[in-house]
Amino acid sequence: MASRHLNQKSNYHARSNSLPSRPHPLILQCNEHLCRLVASDTTSSSPSSALRSKLSCLQDLHECVEKLLLLPQTQQAISQEHHDKWVEELFDGSLQLLDACTATKDAVIHTKECTRELQSNMRRRRGGDMGFEREVRKYLMSRKVVKKAVQKALKGMESKRADKNHENLAMVNTLREIEAATLNVFESLLSYITGSKLRSKSSSWSLVSKLVLPKRVACDNEDTERSELEMVDSALYSIVRERRSKSDDMVNVENVQNLLLKLEPNVQDLEEGLELLFRRLIKTRVSLLNTFNH
Image (cartoon, helix red, strand yellow):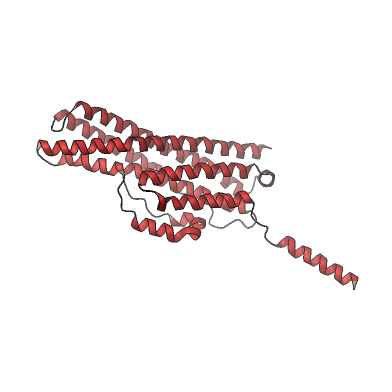
């Protein structure tokens, strides 16, 4: 009888050990940041405001990732399984995020420089002036250069993550979702810079979409507001393409100046947010390398 009771107790412990353990609090915290990242679409008043909010969320998210990588169990898993495919994907993903962040930051900086030069030229010249029209065309050409660079960057941002979830480590699946979410934000930023609508990437948001899909769908359907850069481009094309009276040109010029005044602090905020995020991504990369070399 005692022997049977002992066997039952032993079987109970075996079954208990096989049950999935509760996710680490840091993993739950990462998932909360992911939810906040998507929810920022519904709580922002403009495209630039939504992007600033997303960058802030990403900084918090990757700070959480850095803490997750410093956990003893995480470091042990990486050091013991450094030849496993998921570890290689982790390293490749961190490098891809750094490259994407650099490309996005370069596009934002170039855009800031172009808009500042246009502002300076508009203060010196007037609508209807041939010199002014040349400066407008110069700006529009620089925008084409930026858009070409953005298209090249977007082609390199396809996630190379495996579709199959890792059976043992919730951390791996969470880090994959974070990589996809971060790339999604970079794509949104680049699309904002070009003044174009971002194609749907819902397949890269499997975890987040399950949590807040109704909000995201509603936001995508209702988001018809044009970005500030798109409105600037549209007004400038009107100046160089349409033959209007001098008074009409002056109205257009004033409109562009007002848009540029609103645009400048937004672009500056995006640049600063990307710089902070870039530093955070470097810290994460260093943490990975240190863990791998132990």
